[in-house]
Length: 258
Image 1 (cartoon, rainbow, N blue to C red):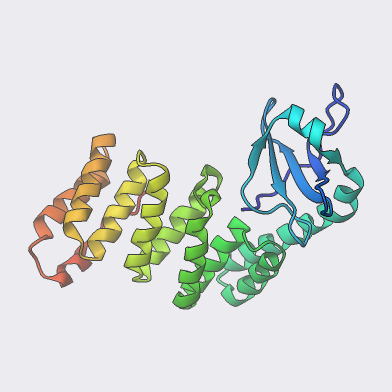
Image 2: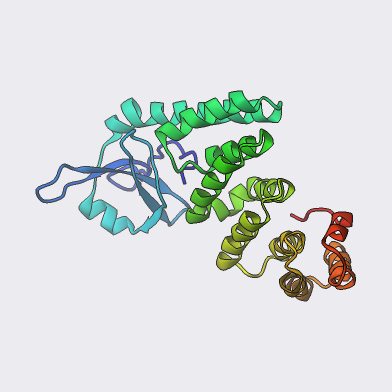
């Protein structure tokens, strides 16, 4: 994932800036460039720069002492080469979002593809592209994007919750129940204490005619949130309809959660 990095911040008590580009010399190799970011007053994270000079991949925590001892600041590279690339990439994503909100999905697809040409793991661009593909019926490509997103743990971070929920709902509405279930299972492998995730997973399981599994998930959701009225309604519906014909599932009218 590649969220928009913050601007470099100077730390007056220290000899180097603690957000920006740093290099690491390796024996018999060219120096490798990294983006270091301050994530709190006391914590730092580090990500490598890809071939297009934007931060890419999962962020790793790094100790201040390690950064000082092993890495060299490269402020000139950040200002001249990295910041412009990040800006260009985010502009493509922002344009893609605006097109998608207007229903201009082919134009959105072009913008998201341009961003992903710079960073193929950009979370917001992947979600946006996947949503546009679902809207225009390109389910094969949407499923490929889903495969990438479930491999990127950053897809399930709180800052992407809205996009995550929207994508899951659209997968289900597109009839991609198996893919939708796999999507929620991946999220639940990271946290099994989210009643909304459990509810949405149960609904996808139900619509995929996996009634017993749906019952188990909705029971877990209600154990976490006994006053979850939509979950209680879905539980009652599942219980009543388990022995009915598959066509009866179309009557389900509980709202989506999240």
